[in-house]
Length: 291
Image (cartoon, rainbow, N blue to C red; front, side, top):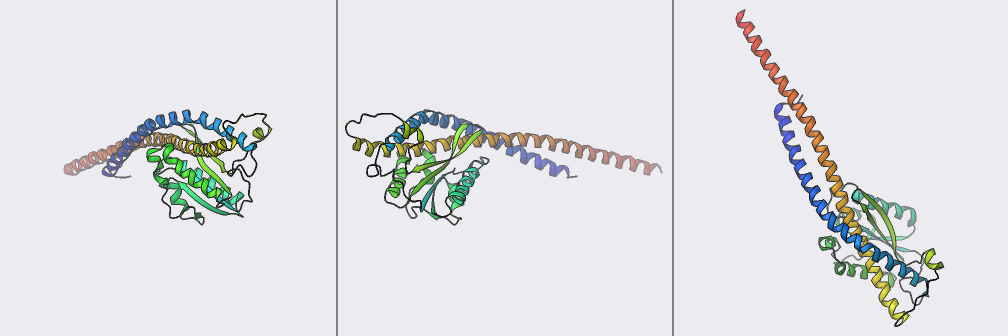
């Protein structure tokens, strides 16, 4: 049985940890509210813009849609969105595992390059066998979450779009966690480029009136929509991160509370044993003196 001093030290240590996890839970809860409001307001706009983009792409020929060109998939870019910090359960590992599994199952015959947004994904992929995309260029991708705004994410989307248009990649897939609620995040793999019209878009009878010209709208709308899709993915990931961290810290706080309860029981038992031993020693000494 551990000594009283050892148990007291463990109680102090666990109590400090509980205070830290409880504080982190409250901080994540506050950040989650703002992040949840941002993605809730953004999602309907992004979904509708994506729908228009797919319908518009279905009406374009290969010469008009530079971002809709279908090529033989020889070079693939995977964009993996993770967090900069840990202590958020399986948030980061789920995205990384999904990306690695897709590469193994679907792109084993292609040349795969990676681009990460978030330090945790970068830490993993830089040790992998895959090639880093845009090596040597300072896109400051790991600092995007420090002040997540559309103006800061747009240049990243533009760089990816330019690489696809120049033929550096034949396909671009974005992996991220989609926010559902504080306890549930859905790992997503969305094809970013080329823009592929869905079956609904192809069969849609929507007839658009283009003003001023179709070509001008295409040049403006499609890039704007693609930038919006990437921004939405980052907002989803940002809200999911805080939800996952809040849930993880809540569980950690509960576990610390349960551990403290067990340690206090152990401490009381050890203290009772020590008192009993002292009493026995006193009684034994008194009996010896009588003899």
